[in-house]
Image (cartoon, rainbow over all chains, first blue to last red):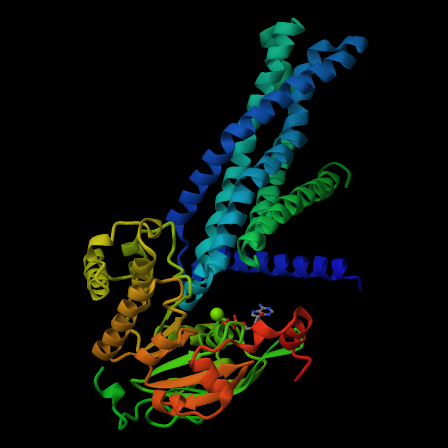
Length: 256
Length: 284
Ligand SMILES: Nc1ncnc2c1ncn2[C@@H]1O[C@H](COP(=O)(O)OP(=O)(O)O)[C@@H](O)[C@H]1O
Ligand SMILES: [Mg+2]
């Protein structure tokens, strides 16, 4: 087997094992007397939420503008200009919101987590935890994963509204759609399924991003240089995994 | 507490090669990295109250040896006993009980940078005794910090104190649970000579006062001879010499005397190819 492939499977098993371990410490262990580290989890939520909110809003605002301009072009030709709001809302809720938010999370908070845990690994802080009998997964990973899995959907919802607002600006001030009509069409076209599928996607993406970030952080080797390398790997892997799992989830929700 | 140090204490099961005075025994330990035996047939014992210094050039396997003993890694061959328990066979839960008996001072100190010095020391106490009231924990933290003369610095973050203070804070954290055993990996690396002397004196004083047995890894000869009651010289993953400081000084093996007199190691004289061959272990 070529070494790249061996390394790929090595990472894949390592990541799966970490996810199983995280699930154990997050879900089963609290029933066996190992309390969840709630304050650490809240701290991570704040860090992740505050860290990614502004970038997330900016990105989603521009996407809202872009989508409105792009769809208006086509809709004008078929005489359905008032549908702009609905198209923006559906596209953003189903697809673009969860995905872009996850990508922002990977680039901003995921990279920060990998760098932080990687630094702790090379400065032997993770070893120190272990020798004190504190499980690193329990102590470090679970708060970060839960924090991101909670903030992912929250940021997505905020992002969706920001994008719809962006679309609204184009629709009302540039295309001359009535504000009330714009909003009504927006919400009319949003089915319940769009909302829950979007939310499920954003939870899955956040789970992937946080676990990947933690995995690459904990497995850093080779000092400060290794931390930089792992951070890049973490972001790249996250983005690929987000899009791959998006494809899978979309197929599950809309084609099967 | 007092009786546990007595050779007549019989409440603990004794097995393996541990004699009544021994606290650690290591037998035929081997660690293999990618086919290379980084540790090879290492056997020794540590007596209660000893300060055992493990010496050797960098890359000879000192840290690796320590990591096997403190359970961070598992050896490919051999067995390790700590306080009558064979640790290579234990489950994670069982090993946690052994962990409470020792403290570890890591090479870089390994203080948690996001916490203050005081919180660092409190961490193991809070985790192992979650029902202690804050007051009690605070008092215990103060006591530990006063041992290393850092009481006034409890509120500072590790980034705000000097290198020597960090090492002392890490020592306080290692001693937080009143361990019987202390492991130190290069405790004086990166300190200036005066701080090294200070830290050595501190180690000596604390080990005597608290009745702690210590295993200290170092490549600093002066420091080694200052604190050791027994010494092991490690070379390419094997024990080259073992004994009291006087016995090591009197050792006639030229490699040993070269090392303790700080003569240039062969590494410096070799070309790159020879060096690689040596570290890849092809020549032996
Ligand atoms: N994780 C690892 N993978 C492969 N080789 C390693 C690993 N850790 C240590 N080594 C090798 O083992 C040898 C001993 O390392 P170490 O115990 O850190 O030496 P020391 O502490 O004596 O300087 C070194 O040659 C090092 O390259
Ligand atoms: Mg070392």
